[in-house]
Image (cartoon, rainbow, N blue to C red; front, side, top):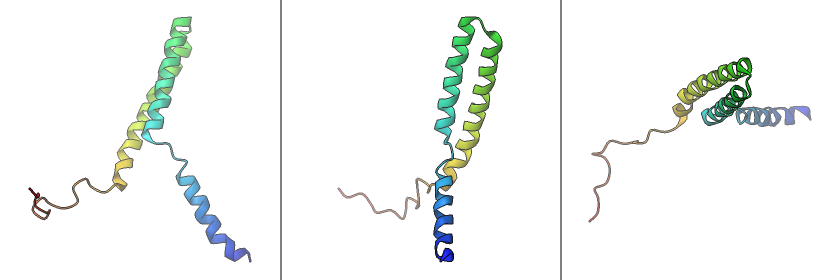
Length: 91
């Protein structure tokens, strides 16, 4: 009985974990929040905490660049067939 449920359970778990990956947009939003917090800390007179927030923002921007580099690989190309194969425009 457990053999019947093992494979579907593994597939559901794999799909659930695949959906948990942060996209590049999520990383950019996190970085923007860190920049805002760094500006607030700088205004409050906490330069060390502001520097820490800026460092975290730089890490998030780097993670966004890395995520953006791998996100587009799984999408089909915008031009799937050459122009000479396409139908002529109807007038």
